[in-house]
Amino acid sequence: MNLNIFRHISALALLIPIGATAADATLEQRVERLEAQLEASNNRTQASLNDQLPRTHFGSYGELHLNKLKNRNGSDKDELDIHRFVIFMSHDFDEQTRLFSELEVEHSNTDNSGVVTLEQAYIEFAANDAMSIKAGMMLMPVGIISETHEPPTFYGVERNPVETNIIPTTWSEGGIAMSNRLQNGLSFDLAITSGLATSATANYAVRAGRQNTSKAMAANAAYTGRLKWTGMPGLELVATLHRQSDITQSTDATAGAATLYETHAVISRGAFSLRALYAAWRLDGSGPASAGADKQNGWYAEPSWRLTEQWGVFARYSSWDNRAGDTSDSHFRQVDLGMNFWPHPDLVIKMDYQNQRSPSGQNEYDGINLGLGYQF
Image 1 (cartoon, rainbow, N blue to C red):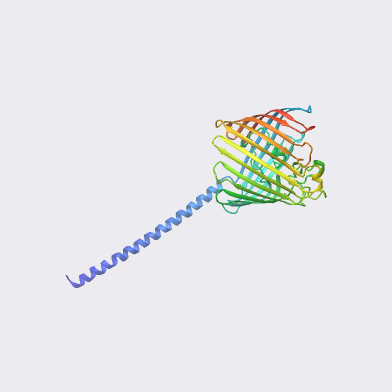
Image 2 (cartoon, helix red, strand yellow):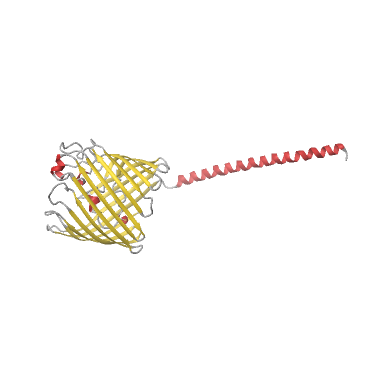
Protein backbone atom coordinates (compact mmCIF):
# COMPACT_ATOMS: atom_id res chain seq x y z
CA MET A 1 0.00 0.00 0.00
CA ASN A 2 1.21 3.46 -0.83
CA LEU A 3 2.59 5.12 2.28
CA ASN A 4 0.72 8.40 1.64
CA ILE A 5 -2.61 6.57 1.32
CA PHE A 6 -1.91 4.76 4.60
CA ARG A 7 -1.22 8.09 6.30
CA HIS A 8 -4.52 9.59 5.05
CA ILE A 9 -6.52 6.57 6.28
CA SER A 10 -4.82 6.73 9.71
CA ALA A 11 -5.57 10.42 10.08
CA LEU A 12 -9.24 9.84 9.15
CA ALA A 13 -9.50 7.04 11.74
CA LEU A 14 -8.18 9.37 14.41
CA LEU A 15 -10.65 12.11 13.49
CA ILE A 16 -13.75 9.86 13.66
CA PRO A 17 -13.84 9.47 17.52
CA ILE A 18 -13.01 13.13 17.92
CA GLY A 19 -15.92 14.05 15.71
CA ALA A 20 -18.20 11.61 17.48
CA THR A 21 -17.25 13.04 20.87
CA ALA A 22 -17.92 16.56 19.67
CA ALA A 23 -21.27 15.46 18.27
CA ASP A 24 -22.19 13.74 21.52
CA ALA A 25 -21.27 16.87 23.48
CA THR A 26 -23.34 19.04 21.18
CA LEU A 27 -26.32 16.66 21.52
CA GLU A 28 -26.01 16.65 25.32
CA GLN A 29 -25.97 20.43 25.40
CA ARG A 30 -29.08 20.54 23.25
CA VAL A 31 -30.86 18.08 25.57
CA GLU A 32 -29.88 20.17 28.58
CA ARG A 33 -31.20 23.31 26.92
CA LEU A 34 -34.48 21.56 26.06
CA GLU A 35 -34.84 20.32 29.65
CA ALA A 36 -34.22 23.82 30.99
CA GLN A 37 -36.79 25.25 28.59
CA LEU A 38 -39.31 22.56 29.58
CA GLU A 39 -38.75 23.22 33.28
CA ALA A 40 -39.18 26.96 32.77
CA SER A 41 -42.37 26.31 30.81
CA ASN A 42 -43.67 24.04 33.58
CA ASN A 43 -42.87 26.70 36.18
CA ARG A 44 -44.75 29.31 34.16
CA THR A 45 -47.70 26.94 33.78
CA GLN A 46 -47.73 26.18 37.52
CA ALA A 47 -47.51 29.87 38.37
CA SER A 48 -50.39 30.54 36.02
CA LEU A 49 -52.44 27.79 37.64
CA ASN A 50 -51.63 29.13 41.10
CA ASP A 51 -52.81 32.55 40.02
CA GLN A 52 -56.08 31.02 38.84
CA LEU A 53 -56.73 29.05 42.05
CA PRO A 54 -59.02 30.77 44.58
CA ARG A 55 -57.06 32.41 47.37
CA THR A 56 -60.07 33.45 49.46
CA HIS A 57 -62.22 30.69 50.96
CA PHE A 58 -65.60 30.70 52.68
CA GLY A 59 -67.34 28.16 54.89
CA SER A 60 -69.99 27.95 57.56
CA TYR A 61 -71.51 25.95 60.36
CA GLY A 62 -74.74 26.31 62.27
CA GLU A 63 -77.15 24.55 64.60
CA LEU A 64 -80.85 24.65 65.42
CA HIS A 65 -81.89 23.42 68.89
CA LEU A 66 -85.21 22.40 70.39
CA ASN A 67 -85.08 22.08 74.18
CA LYS A 68 -87.99 20.52 76.09
CA LEU A 69 -86.69 20.59 79.66
CA LYS A 70 -88.47 20.51 83.00
CA ASN A 71 -87.08 22.66 85.80
CA ARG A 72 -87.74 21.73 89.43
CA ASN A 73 -87.93 25.46 90.23
CA GLY A 74 -90.89 25.78 87.88
CA SER A 75 -89.27 27.75 85.03
CA ASP A 76 -89.35 25.09 82.32
CA LYS A 77 -87.40 25.49 79.11
CA ASP A 78 -89.54 24.97 76.01
CA GLU A 79 -87.49 26.68 73.37
CA LEU A 80 -86.66 26.55 69.66
CA ASP A 81 -83.48 28.45 68.90
CA ILE A 82 -81.06 29.10 66.06
CA HIS A 83 -78.29 28.69 68.58
CA ARG A 84 -75.42 29.52 66.25
CA PHE A 85 -74.85 30.67 62.69
CA VAL A 86 -71.18 31.04 61.83
CA ILE A 87 -69.35 32.20 58.71
CA PHE A 88 -65.70 31.28 58.09
CA MET A 89 -63.47 33.35 55.85
CA SER A 90 -59.81 32.69 55.11
CA HIS A 91 -57.36 34.16 52.64
CA ASP A 92 -54.05 32.74 51.42
CA PHE A 93 -51.57 35.57 50.94
CA ASP A 94 -48.99 33.06 49.76
CA GLU A 95 -47.99 29.46 50.49
CA GLN A 96 -46.80 30.34 53.99
CA THR A 97 -49.17 33.06 55.18
CA ARG A 98 -52.92 33.16 55.56
CA LEU A 99 -55.74 34.94 57.39
CA PHE A 100 -58.40 32.93 59.21
CA SER A 101 -61.58 34.43 60.68
CA GLU A 102 -64.89 33.30 62.15
CA LEU A 103 -67.94 35.54 62.63
CA GLU A 104 -70.78 34.19 64.75
CA VAL A 105 -74.43 35.11 65.32
CA GLU A 106 -75.97 33.55 68.42
CA HIS A 107 -79.73 33.22 68.97
CA SER A 108 -80.65 34.68 65.58
CA ASN A 109 -80.75 38.38 66.50
CA THR A 110 -79.75 40.90 69.14
CA ASP A 111 -83.34 41.73 70.15
CA ASN A 112 -83.75 38.61 72.30
CA SER A 113 -80.43 37.97 74.11
CA GLY A 114 -78.70 37.35 70.79
CA VAL A 115 -75.18 38.51 70.01
CA VAL A 116 -72.99 39.05 66.99
CA THR A 117 -69.42 38.24 67.89
CA LEU A 118 -66.04 37.67 66.30
CA GLU A 119 -64.75 34.32 67.50
CA GLN A 120 -61.44 34.17 65.61
CA ALA A 121 -59.36 36.53 63.48
CA TYR A 122 -55.67 35.73 63.18
CA ILE A 123 -52.75 35.62 60.78
CA GLU A 124 -50.92 32.29 60.54
CA PHE A 125 -47.41 31.89 59.17
CA ALA A 126 -46.01 28.45 58.36
CA ALA A 127 -42.31 28.69 59.16
CA ASN A 128 -41.75 25.16 57.82
CA ASP A 129 -43.59 21.86 57.52
CA ALA A 130 -43.49 21.33 61.30
CA MET A 131 -43.83 24.80 62.85
CA SER A 132 -46.38 27.60 62.50
CA ILE A 133 -46.90 30.91 64.26
CA LYS A 134 -50.16 32.80 64.54
CA ALA A 135 -51.11 36.19 65.95
CA GLY A 136 -54.47 37.81 66.52
CA MET A 137 -57.66 36.56 68.13
CA MET A 138 -57.67 32.77 68.45
CA LEU A 139 -59.36 29.88 70.22
CA MET A 140 -57.45 28.67 73.25
CA PRO A 141 -55.70 25.28 72.87
CA VAL A 142 -57.47 23.73 75.87
CA GLY A 143 -59.84 20.75 75.97
CA ILE A 144 -61.40 18.61 73.27
CA ILE A 145 -64.02 20.83 71.64
CA SER A 146 -62.50 24.30 72.02
CA GLU A 147 -60.83 24.30 68.61
CA THR A 148 -63.09 21.72 66.90
CA HIS A 149 -66.71 22.40 67.88
CA GLU A 150 -68.71 22.13 64.65
CA PRO A 151 -71.97 20.19 65.29
CA PRO A 152 -71.17 17.10 63.14
CA THR A 153 -67.93 16.52 65.09
CA PHE A 154 -69.38 15.73 68.53
CA TYR A 155 -72.27 13.93 70.23
CA GLY A 156 -75.06 15.69 72.07
CA VAL A 157 -77.22 18.64 71.08
CA GLU A 158 -75.56 21.01 73.57
CA ARG A 159 -71.83 21.21 74.22
CA ASN A 160 -70.86 19.26 77.30
CA PRO A 161 -71.25 21.22 80.59
CA VAL A 162 -67.72 20.55 81.90
CA GLU A 163 -65.93 22.17 78.96
CA THR A 164 -68.58 24.91 78.98
CA ASN A 165 -68.40 25.86 82.67
CA ILE A 166 -64.87 24.91 83.70
CA ILE A 167 -62.52 25.42 80.73
CA PRO A 168 -64.63 27.56 79.52
CA THR A 169 -65.35 26.72 75.86
CA THR A 170 -65.77 28.53 73.54
CA TRP A 171 -62.85 30.63 74.78
CA SER A 172 -61.08 33.15 72.56
CA GLU A 173 -58.17 35.41 73.46
CA GLY A 174 -55.93 37.85 71.62
CA GLY A 175 -52.22 37.17 71.47
CA ILE A 176 -49.53 35.12 69.78
CA ALA A 177 -49.09 31.34 69.62
CA MET A 178 -46.66 28.80 68.21
CA SER A 179 -47.38 25.19 67.21
CA ASN A 180 -44.63 22.65 66.58
CA ARG A 181 -44.94 19.04 65.45
CA LEU A 182 -42.12 16.82 66.64
CA GLN A 183 -41.35 13.23 65.75
CA ASN A 184 -43.23 10.12 66.87
CA GLY A 185 -46.62 11.87 67.01
CA LEU A 186 -45.56 14.44 69.62
CA SER A 187 -46.48 18.11 69.28
CA PHE A 188 -46.63 21.15 71.52
CA ASP A 189 -48.33 24.55 71.54
CA LEU A 190 -47.27 27.70 73.37
CA ALA A 191 -49.36 30.88 73.64
CA ILE A 192 -49.13 34.30 75.26
CA THR A 193 -52.54 35.93 75.33
CA SER A 194 -54.87 38.28 77.12
CA GLY A 195 -56.41 36.65 80.18
CA LEU A 196 -59.74 36.23 81.89
CA ALA A 197 -61.25 39.02 84.02
CA THR A 198 -63.79 37.50 86.42
CA SER A 199 -65.05 39.26 89.54
CA ALA A 200 -66.47 38.82 93.03
CA THR A 201 -69.98 39.64 91.78
CA ALA A 202 -69.77 36.52 89.60
CA ASN A 203 -68.38 34.47 92.51
CA TYR A 204 -65.12 34.35 90.54
CA ALA A 205 -66.61 31.88 88.05
CA VAL A 206 -64.09 31.48 85.23
CA ARG A 207 -66.70 31.53 82.45
CA ALA A 208 -67.82 35.00 83.56
CA GLY A 209 -64.29 36.24 82.91
CA ARG A 210 -64.23 35.76 79.13
CA GLN A 211 -63.46 39.10 77.43
CA ASN A 212 -63.58 38.02 73.75
CA THR A 213 -60.82 40.52 72.92
CA SER A 214 -63.38 43.34 73.03
CA LYS A 215 -61.53 46.27 74.66
CA ALA A 216 -60.15 43.50 76.87
CA MET A 217 -58.33 44.48 80.03
CA ALA A 218 -54.73 43.41 79.49
CA ALA A 219 -52.96 44.25 82.73
CA ASN A 220 -52.15 40.58 83.30
CA ALA A 221 -51.16 38.33 80.42
CA ALA A 222 -51.86 34.60 80.36
CA TYR A 223 -49.48 31.81 79.37
CA THR A 224 -50.61 28.48 77.93
CA GLY A 225 -48.70 25.34 77.08
CA ARG A 226 -50.11 22.15 75.58
CA LEU A 227 -48.41 18.81 74.95
CA LYS A 228 -50.14 16.32 72.64
CA TRP A 229 -49.26 12.76 71.66
CA THR A 230 -50.91 10.98 68.72
CA GLY A 231 -48.19 8.40 68.07
CA MET A 232 -50.60 5.46 68.03
CA PRO A 233 -53.53 5.25 65.56
CA GLY A 234 -56.83 5.97 67.26
CA LEU A 235 -55.27 7.48 70.40
CA GLU A 236 -54.83 11.11 71.48
CA LEU A 237 -53.35 12.03 74.86
CA VAL A 238 -53.13 15.69 75.89
CA ALA A 239 -52.00 17.73 78.89
CA THR A 240 -52.42 21.52 79.14
CA LEU A 241 -51.26 24.14 81.64
CA HIS A 242 -52.63 27.70 81.68
CA ARG A 243 -51.64 30.45 84.09
CA GLN A 244 -52.20 34.15 84.56
CA SER A 245 -50.95 36.36 87.38
CA ASP A 246 -54.36 37.84 88.28
CA ILE A 247 -57.74 36.33 87.40
CA THR A 248 -59.44 39.75 87.79
CA GLN A 249 -56.92 41.76 85.74
CA SER A 250 -55.79 43.55 88.93
CA THR A 251 -59.26 44.97 89.64
CA ASP A 252 -59.68 43.02 92.90
CA ALA A 253 -56.96 43.26 95.55
CA THR A 254 -58.29 40.14 97.29
CA ALA A 255 -57.75 37.96 94.21
CA GLY A 256 -54.54 36.77 92.65
CA ALA A 257 -53.02 34.27 90.24
CA ALA A 258 -54.99 31.47 88.61
CA THR A 259 -53.81 28.16 87.18
CA LEU A 260 -55.73 25.72 84.99
CA TYR A 261 -54.71 22.07 84.70
CA GLU A 262 -56.39 20.08 81.93
CA THR A 263 -55.84 16.60 80.58
CA HIS A 264 -57.87 14.43 78.25
CA ALA A 265 -57.81 11.29 76.17
CA VAL A 266 -59.62 10.40 72.96
CA ILE A 267 -59.64 6.70 72.06
CA SER A 268 -61.05 5.24 68.83
CA ARG A 269 -61.10 1.50 68.16
CA GLY A 270 -63.23 0.54 65.19
CA ALA A 271 -66.81 1.52 65.92
CA PHE A 272 -66.08 2.29 69.58
CA SER A 273 -64.85 5.68 70.85
CA LEU A 274 -64.21 7.15 74.27
CA ARG A 275 -63.65 10.75 75.30
CA ALA A 276 -62.55 11.50 78.86
CA LEU A 277 -61.48 14.86 80.29
CA TYR A 278 -60.50 16.39 83.62
CA ALA A 279 -59.98 20.12 84.26
CA ALA A 280 -59.24 22.03 87.46
CA TRP A 281 -58.64 25.68 88.33
CA ARG A 282 -56.71 26.89 91.38
CA LEU A 283 -57.32 30.55 92.26
CA ASP A 284 -55.15 32.45 94.74
CA GLY A 285 -56.31 35.15 97.13
CA SER A 286 -58.72 35.52 100.01
CA GLY A 287 -61.54 36.69 97.73
CA PRO A 288 -61.92 33.48 95.74
CA ALA A 289 -61.31 31.43 98.90
CA SER A 290 -64.14 33.19 100.76
CA ALA A 291 -66.55 32.28 97.94
CA GLY A 292 -65.27 28.71 97.68
CA ALA A 293 -64.10 29.54 94.14
CA ASP A 294 -60.43 28.93 94.86
CA LYS A 295 -61.10 25.42 93.54
CA GLN A 296 -63.16 24.90 90.38
CA ASN A 297 -63.05 21.53 88.70
CA GLY A 298 -64.92 18.99 86.60
CA TRP A 299 -64.62 15.82 84.59
CA TYR A 300 -66.63 13.75 82.14
CA ALA A 301 -66.50 10.42 80.37
CA GLU A 302 -68.29 9.80 77.06
CA PRO A 303 -68.31 6.36 75.42
CA SER A 304 -69.93 6.13 71.99
CA TRP A 305 -70.65 3.47 69.40
CA ARG A 306 -70.92 4.03 65.64
CA LEU A 307 -73.62 1.54 64.66
CA THR A 308 -73.25 2.33 60.94
CA GLU A 309 -71.71 5.09 58.83
CA GLN A 310 -74.84 7.14 59.50
CA TRP A 311 -75.96 6.17 63.02
CA GLY A 312 -74.17 6.53 66.34
CA VAL A 313 -75.19 6.35 70.01
CA PHE A 314 -73.50 7.77 73.10
CA ALA A 315 -73.69 8.09 76.89
CA ARG A 316 -72.00 10.79 78.97
CA TYR A 317 -71.54 11.39 82.68
CA SER A 318 -70.48 14.92 83.70
CA SER A 319 -69.51 16.33 87.09
CA TRP A 320 -68.51 19.95 87.75
CA ASP A 321 -68.27 22.48 90.58
CA ASN A 322 -67.34 26.16 90.29
CA ARG A 323 -67.24 26.56 94.07
CA ALA A 324 -65.54 23.36 95.11
CA GLY A 325 -63.45 25.12 97.75
CA ASP A 326 -66.26 25.51 100.27
CA THR A 327 -68.20 23.01 102.35
CA SER A 328 -71.63 23.87 100.95
CA ASP A 329 -73.25 21.82 98.20
CA SER A 330 -72.35 23.39 94.86
CA HIS A 331 -71.76 20.21 92.89
CA PHE A 332 -73.58 19.58 89.57
CA ARG A 333 -73.95 16.19 87.91
CA GLN A 334 -75.55 15.30 84.58
CA VAL A 335 -76.21 12.13 82.59
CA ASP A 336 -76.82 12.36 78.83
CA LEU A 337 -78.02 9.53 76.57
CA GLY A 338 -78.65 9.99 72.88
CA MET A 339 -77.96 9.37 69.22
CA ASN A 340 -76.64 11.13 66.12
CA PHE A 341 -77.78 10.56 62.55
CA TRP A 342 -75.52 11.76 59.71
CA PRO A 343 -77.42 11.78 56.36
CA HIS A 344 -74.19 13.34 55.04
CA PRO A 345 -70.80 13.48 56.81
CA ASP A 346 -71.19 17.26 57.18
CA LEU A 347 -74.85 17.21 58.24
CA VAL A 348 -76.18 15.80 61.53
CA ILE A 349 -79.51 15.30 63.28
CA LYS A 350 -79.25 14.80 67.05
CA MET A 351 -81.49 13.68 69.88
CA ASP A 352 -80.63 13.17 73.54
CA TYR A 353 -82.13 12.91 77.00
CA GLN A 354 -80.48 14.74 79.91
CA ASN A 355 -80.92 14.10 83.62
CA GLN A 356 -79.38 16.72 85.89
CA ARG A 357 -78.68 16.78 89.62
CA SER A 358 -78.13 20.30 90.94
CA PRO A 359 -77.40 21.84 94.35
CA SER A 360 -80.36 22.89 96.47
CA GLY A 361 -81.95 26.09 95.18
CA GLN A 362 -80.29 25.86 91.76
CA ASN A 363 -82.06 25.21 88.46
CA GLU A 364 -82.23 21.53 87.56
CA TYR A 365 -83.18 20.70 83.98
CA ASP A 366 -84.32 17.26 82.84
CA GLY A 367 -85.76 16.37 79.46
CA ILE A 368 -85.29 16.04 75.70
CA ASN A 369 -83.04 17.98 73.31
CA LEU A 370 -83.29 17.85 69.51
CA GLY A 371 -80.77 19.39 67.17
CA LEU A 372 -79.90 19.96 63.52
CA GLY A 373 -76.36 20.96 62.55
CA TYR A 374 -74.11 21.35 59.51
CA GLN A 375 -70.65 22.39 58.41
CA PHE A 376 -68.92 23.06 55.09
